[in-house]
Image (cartoon, rainbow, N blue to C red; front, side, top):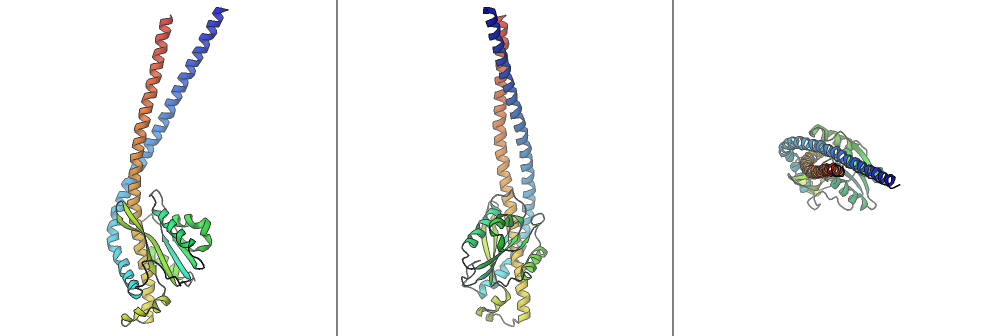
Amino acid sequence: MLRQGAGTLQLVSQSFVNAEQARGFATLKDISIRLKSVKNIQKITKSMKMVAAAKYAKAERDLKGARAYGVGAKTFFDNIDPVAAEGAPKEESKKQVLVLITSDRGLCGAVHTSIVKEARNILNNAGDKDIRVVAIGDKSRAGLQRVYGKHFLVSGNEIGRAPPTFADASIAAKAILDSGFDFETGTIVFNRFKSVVSYETSKLQILPLEAIKAKEALNTYDSVDDDVLQSYSEYSLAQLIYYAMKESATSEQSSRMTAMDGASKNAGEMIDKLTLAFNRTRQAVITRELIEIISGAACV
């Protein structure tokens, strides 16, 4: 009876040891799989950072030339309406259009979120105003579609895959003018590029032809007939949209470069922790096996 009990105890002890070994090997395998996954993610984030850096350098060069478009059109609107704040439509304007400049691509920090947040703030405080949304880019449309879908006037996608051009801005401006919505004032919400690590969510005021004609300060300009004014109002809308798209594209690439740099550093820290955990677990398994071998030899 005593021998059987000892044999039974030895069998239970051996099965417990085997279970502990299996648990150790399973942990090693899990850590190894996760370590490999994090290393692959780090490779992707580093590649995306390099691509974003190249696109950012090109976007910053293009922005220097595009700013002339925006500054010229903005100066004209400021001259004929000096009272209005930057991008802030007048309170008595009941019919307004809100142009949101984003893109179709993510992984760039809070660039698109800041645009959507500003748009929500404007729509929540609209009151009895009829505000229609022009979403340039899938990110702005996706952020507002569920709650403010009835406010959408025009939406466009395929933005961000290639650098924005004046032709893209002209298509957006034509879509707004041909939408049939006779707005009194409008606002373009975009991200203004400041530096590699910072941007600012800004607004630009846009006015239709009838609103421009109603401004008394327009008399300061000589020899401005209706045909010239109509042509310029259409062209200035495309100007401002093009300028805003260039500013937002540069902000997006710089933010993506910064985000991917942070993601690569975080992945590196996680790799170091997983490597340390893997080595400790492997050492513990080896030490336990050596103890079992030595204990078995001592028993013999």
